[in-house]
Image (cartoon, rainbow, N blue to C red; front, top):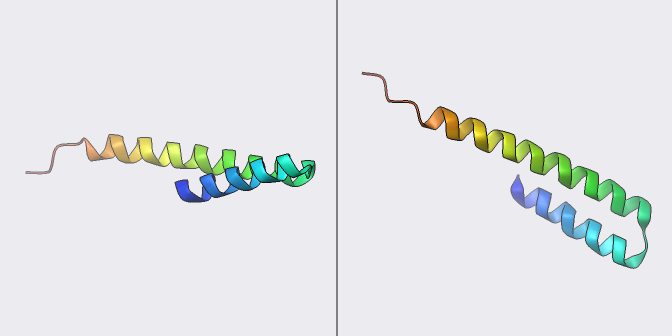
Length: 55
């Protein structure tokens, strides 16, 4: 999922340089949403992975 966020970020940067403002804004929004979702899932897995195994 992080690779998708990075892909949309690169698309946004290229579109911004080339002057496609609407496409750059959309790609930036998608990259932001995917990165936030990745970060939340990472934190959840980090917290759940720290539990001690059942005996």
